[in-house]
Image 1 (cartoon, rainbow, N blue to C red):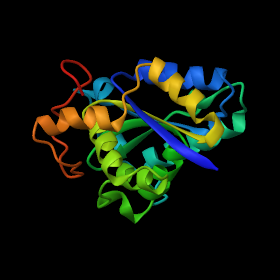
Image 2: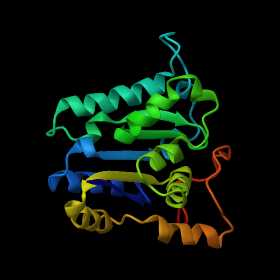
Image 3: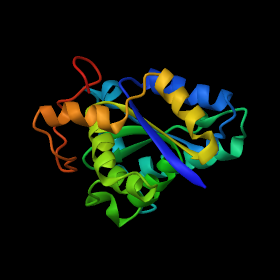
Length: 206
C-alpha cells in the first residue's frame, strides 16, 4: 500500500538534493513531486507571463507548461529524473511556483480550466487528495507561500523509513515542527487569498 511522505525545505537547493538522493536510492521519479516557490527569481520582474494565453487555446500557458513538463519528465525516463520536467505555475494564494511530478500534474489540471481565476488552496486540496491530513496540508501550503519548497514521495509501507531518513538528512522539516513555529506567531491556517508578496526565501525561518 502506498503512502505519501512530505517535507518542507527552506531552500530549493535542499529540496533538489532530497529529490536527487531519493532517485539515487531507487525511488522512481514518477513517485516524486516538487513544488517550490519562485518568488526569489521573479522579484521585480514582469509577472504577466504567469497568466497569459499566448496560443489562444483558452488555457493558461503556465499551467500547460507545468503539465507538459510533468508529462515529459515521465516520458524521458529514469535517467533524466524528476527535475528534467520542471515547469512554472501561478497558483492563487501562492503566486509563482516551479513544479514537477504527480503533484504538479494535479495542480496543472486544476489551473488549466475555469478554476484558474477562483481556485482556493489548489495545493491544499491536492495534498489532501494525496492523503495528507488537513492540518499538515495547511502548514505545507503556508510554507510554500512563505518561500519554501515542498517535496512529496509516494512509497510502499516497507520503504517509508528509508525515504523518511533521506528527507530528514536533506534538512526536510515536517508539518508538526514547522506548524508549531507558525502558531506561535498567531498563524492558524493557510489563506489562499493572502498573497502580498512579503515573504521571501531569505531572512528568518519559513
